[in-house]
Image (cartoon, rainbow, N blue to C red; front, top):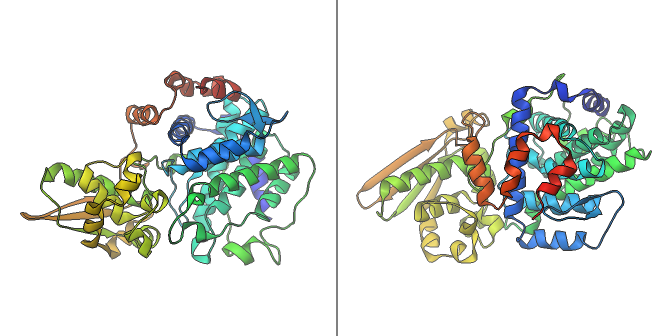
Length: 437
């Protein structure tokens, strides 16, 4: 049974199985996730989640990011997960299903606190959760069936939490069963005009995955076989698939760190637009054409709302808005999504003169690459720029120096920067303490 195979992989993976590159990249993704989380602490849904969490205390709990004192474990997972995801600035994995595997990281830091785990334990659990999330994304796309990708995050966070809790194979199987059965999420979260929940859905899935692992730890059992059963995951959600679980995890190094706070399929388009802006100088742009691939068109261009965004959540998932805003300003940053930037008459006018084309050749490059071409038309002619692998793509990695600048610009505590490098020699509790502000 598939749940048994997942459990066997989770329980057999040890820190010594991780390559030096895996350990380095895991540290970079933890740093990146912490940085984007600090940048979102003032966002309305994050403040709501943190306010709710503060109602609770627990003997088996974890801290809210930047604060001392434990709240209930699942509440810490949700609040910290909302912070990590809300800006849409955490890392990405592209395959049959696109997702953000770092949605697991806040959950695993919280579980590591509760379990008094070591930094090496955390790094191992992060590698395990990334592996499960990514191979599920490789196995089946569920978005066209009406289900949201965070369904996979419930499973991967349950796997990572089980690792940190040192559950045996039988209890890990039950954690997977308990995470899968009640946590199939609707894709409506990412359809039409997007709400606050877009940035909270993965945090909810991770919370539920951790909850499943806690229940399994204390002996709760779940429906089985959860994948192959008559009313199981394969028949109801994903279609049948198999997973190729290697002896050691390796998918983490194939994930992409974001350079700009945009939906990842637009990353190369923004890079292209910014390169064009530097060439154009002050010349006004009269018309824009964007050549892209089918998946990008479906997710960030197809809906009418993407052409007239009214919320931050819709704007950062709008290919035409992101390109036009980058051409107008010469940057995309958090303040690109203020209400006046979204409803700026200049960008609304340029959107009317923007066209998105699907390019068959680009479809053949995806998901290995995320190709986009932006052509800007001015009074003096047209200017075009193509980007295949944006900065931050695993085949065009972001440098340590630029990653550190991103972390600090988002408000990550400077004193913690060196701590990440030696994380395997410290504890998770020490990590959360050094992140207090």
